[in-house]
Length: 392
Image 1 (cartoon, rainbow, N blue to C red):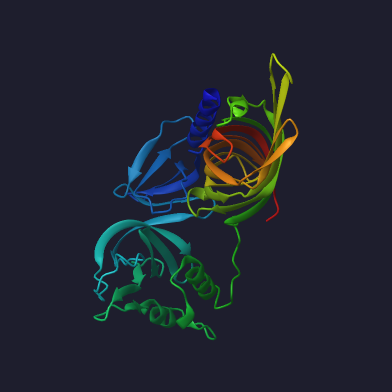
Image 2 (tube, rainbow, N blue to C red; image 1 turned 90 degrees about the vertical axis):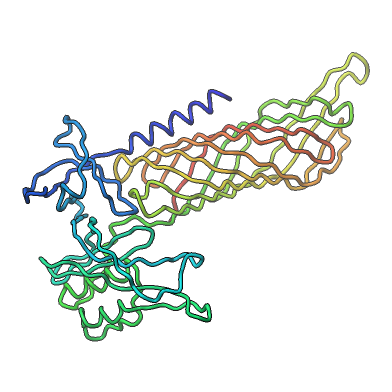
């Protein structure tokens, strides 16, 4: 089992290292010179302060910061530009919102991410919360203002100044700016439409869906051992048994690092039957113990992907798994007794490969000790192969 742990840990480490990719890009340095380079594209959740650069595949990696780069971008049209702007912060966490209704801007030098380009550019800056800026080409960006605060009666108030700004700046007839949300999707749609002469622009749909549903079929080798207060249930160790499992996996991709991380929940159901034969020197010479249960497992955890291209990737899974055994039966020499339901928990480790909609994963889960009416110190080790097919 230690070898399996080591294998999963090693594979996960290699995945993390392999995900560090440099992509074809450009940068404009402090003197205004533009050059083609390779930049590590982290699909950053928060706007970067430092970027990792290589002049060629064979050259050494080096770092550049705000003082050395005016602008950089990638072939997928992702562009960051350096500006010194007034930034007004706000809080989303209700416990951190104060009673100050003022925007209280602070001047900062940052990389702003370009979201829309044209007559009026839209930029975003994420540090704790997203902030949005606008500017005509060649001009300094100004923030679209939004804030929340508590009044004297401790009622939550929202200042939606950005809606008034949008109505004044964009002014596309037939558009109700009072319903605009302070979000990337909503604001990008409005600016793209304005930059297309107020003709609505549909979303490009270049980003992958954040939500996936996979049907799951698995084959596992389960090994069970337990003790019991009755002498003939003492020190039972059953041989490994092949068990099929079926279920569904729900997966949500986190919106950063090119959706390399996801959260999973995968309820699975299976039936388990196994037996143990003990040999005695006296009659009846053998004793057969038969165990039958039906089980629901629910792993909850995280997955990390290393994308080779749009169709192929490797991944590693780490989850906390809850197993619930429904009422089953215990047979001793054909004398059957009912078993009460019980539960156990385990960490689940997995390493797999994905090709288009099909996924294959090697998983391992050693369940912690638990007890029921007839059993104590129940332990189960579980090694299996999981096949998943993406239906959504």
